[in-house]
Image (cartoon, rainbow, N blue to C red; front, top):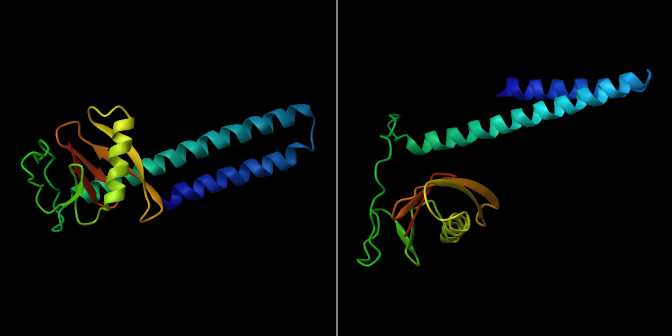
Amino acid sequence: MPDIRRSVFLALASAVLVAGFGGCGGDDSEDVSEERISQERREAAQIARQEERVKQLERELRERQRGDGQAAPEPGPAPSAPPSSGTAPAGTTSCGDGVYVNSVTTCPFAHNVRAEYNSSGGSGDMTVEAYSAATGQRYVMTCSGGSPHVCFGGNDARIYFP
C-alpha cells in the first residue's frame, strides 16, 4: 500500500510542478498543464477507490477467518431465528423489533443498518453503509436477502433482522 500512496503523492506533486511552470509559456502550455492536472486527479481518485476496495475486502476476509488462521467455510443459508418463537441466533442479544446483534455490535448501529437496508429497496443481497454513533464512523455492511437478513462487516459486526 505505501507504494501506491507514494505514487499518488508523486503524481500530484508532478501535476503541481507542471501547473506552476505552465504559466511561463504560451497558451498551449496552459492547456496541456490543465489537461495533465485533470488526468492526474482522475488517476489519484481511481487509486483512492481501489485502496478503499482493498480495505473492504480485507475487512471481509478478517470476518471470514477463524481464530486458528484457517479460512471459514463460505456462508451457507442464513441461520433462522423465527421471531414468533422468540429464539435468538446463538451468541446474540436482542435489540427489539426482531433485531439481534453479536457481542461487538451496538443496537443503535444495528437499527441504522436495518433502516439503510430497507431504504435501499429492502430485498435481495446488497451492501449498505451505515453510521455508528459509538465510533462516529460509517461502515460498509454486506446483507443477505434471506429471512432473517444477516448483515456483516464493519469491525466484525453481525446483525440479524426479519
